[in-house]
Figure 1 (cartoon, one colour):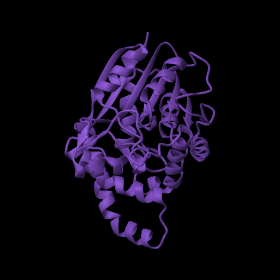
Figure 2 (cartoon, rainbow, N blue to C red):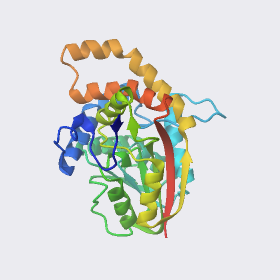
Figure 3 (cartoon, helix red, strand yellow):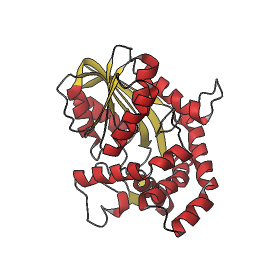
Length: 305
């Protein structure tokens, strides 16, 4: 059996090889992943309108296509966090600006997006200008565990599939608390493990996902709730949206299977980087994590007293 411990890095077997990376090296690895895979995401997953590097939200009431499901995820988070048009939002781990631009464009919010990739920040600025919201948004290169912003700068901290990149999730929550105004809210949407012990086959799927998405480890729902409480957050609510995410899981799996010949040939010709190949393999492995109920997908909301 294999054990996935909190606060450890399991990418590329770094922990088992006694070669743990520094926080700076971890950030550089994550930035390289997203820089290398920028075009892959645009071609195989999102588009230039939604700019979404996350799972979609598929509502059973209305039939959504992939594009609409990705946009719908933003609306779901926006509503569950109780965000208002006048709220100033920090998009912690903004990627190429999808959610930041959406909030500004759809609701008129002033949003600051931060990413550890300078290329992502440049892409996001270009996309914001193209969408006509450049005056409402700002993109900076910064670590969401140690931001350059003064205390009590934001009404809302938004983390859509980004908090998982923190080696110590509590470090992210501590910084979110610091930059939130009194009464401010945090909304975190991510995958969480349902168990810590795995057999050989399950472990390979877990490590493939961690490595392919540059994620050091995953939290459990109870652990994350405890970290929020420890930091002082109140009105903590966990919304389990695994069922509404399953269609995205299936979509990603089907896309990966369809692209297998292209991936195989391109890799053989040396046209795929290590990060691109690892990212492709996640499309297959993530399906096992969800179908075998090794992981769940949740939205957390909480408030600073």
